[in-house]
Image (cartoon, rainbow, N blue to C red; front, side, top):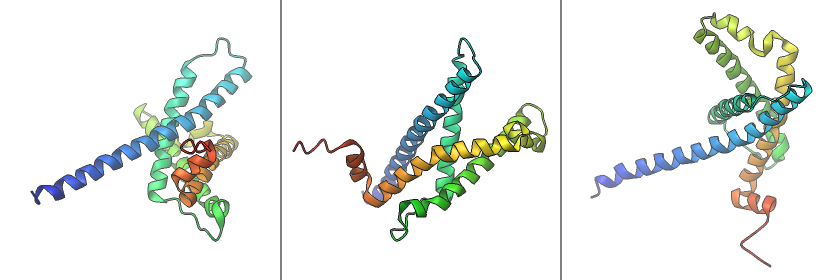
Length: 178
């Protein structure tokens, strides 16, 4: 019986960890997807597209899932840390820029792999990211940072106060009717 206990504990731990990672990825995908769908809708209306193609929303959700995965990779490589002496904003400002660089780099790699799949040279495909327009890449980076920043602040608040306290602050305490 004691021989099976060590084997069952890691499996349960792995299962719980996998579930936790799935939930995080799903939540981030929904968060990014909301932003990316809103931006796609804005772009379609700005271009006066009629009817608005539903495929842009599918692409936005797909891109959101990829960005969520990139964000989780960045968090695994560079975990979020909050220094109580400096507060949440000061602690996470540099980290937000690191996450931005990681996601930007992974997007460049994604563009290179996408090019390889379509028979293009890897480096040429990487340079075509952002339509080969550095200002477009900067604009995309600013928008992405503005999307990521609130998520990081919420995560920092959750680290500082605890998940339950953060939920109570944001949505109220349903357990205490008084």
